View 1: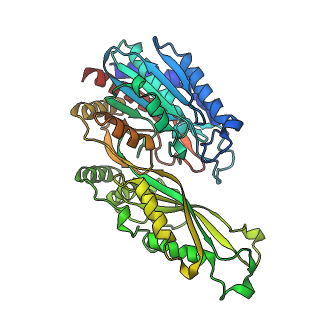
View 2 (view 1 turned 45 degrees about the horizontal axis):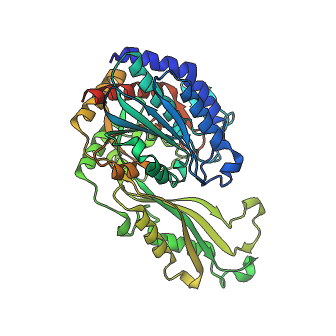
View 3 (view 1 turned 180 degrees about the vertical axis):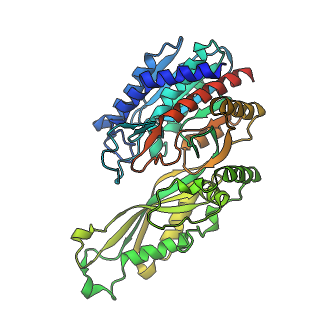
Length: 468
């Protein structure tokens, strides 16, 4: 396959058709069901899947079938089948549902307002990962444009990923016979540590999340009257969090949430750390003189890929400062997210989290932890020599730099499901979530120039897969 011709074809199609479709997609507030319980009535997920399906159906790919599969009570799934002329089956994966708005967008930007500045298209979901279905088909079309052989390709584009993919197992079961045996999975929902080469994700952390609630009163009372007599629900919540996290270091205390890091992953972290140096943490928008938790780049990579850490995502029971009177509040409620290492079972981690938080409540307070999201991480099987060669060759042809393997800090539940369902498959998990792209947060953007190059890399890997 001619990489220069592939790049030219991909870039032209992105400019002509994909960028305008992504602009339309960003305008759709198709929040994941976890964040929009009225998703069916609101119809935004339907708009997004129809947009993608319509574009796919208009592409000149002979023999391709495009279907929106619907199971009762579940978010829809876009399913594509493309016949091939080489052995094997490739499964391409992405999703169309989005994270909620989040605050802090800079002036002129917003989650549902697409804005192009140079190579960056701002707006929610473009990078995470509305582009995936468009890039996947474009890679196949680049092969066909040069009459290069490729295996049969199927694509599963879900609409529940940001809620933990709880609808996806039902679709995997329903489509199992149609999908058949898969020998390569290409997932475009991951990230890159710079925009200079192909990044190859080899592991993903899991997540155990839920809501911790502490009740001490049935209604608020005068703080001057009650403080010193009625225990603070916030203080009790702090004590409970201390069971999970060392507040001085951020380290997670219970051993149940840790695992041994495989030597291969340690070596990959060292390689990536040596390449990136301070760029590992410089990409984050630190306020004032805030320092990093660790200064060693390799340790920073391991912290965000193979070690557990806790985040408090939200709170209830705390009135805005402007309306906060002198009241000892009746309760505190915190949304917790515990990222767990790839080899930790998320269901068990969730049970452990509930057990630890609810046991022996301080002052006999009413304490509950209600899980609402959990997904086990993923550790890739050993990469076949042909795939390592293909990734290296593609990155060098498109970027003139080698491909780099490293872990990912987020969670893609589908990867764990596929790892169990297709133990013989190889995995190329990659994506455009690079420095400052800020998925889930304000000012999310997709780096268009990188997305084009990544699409060309996928085409080259598909060509090598056909020749393996």
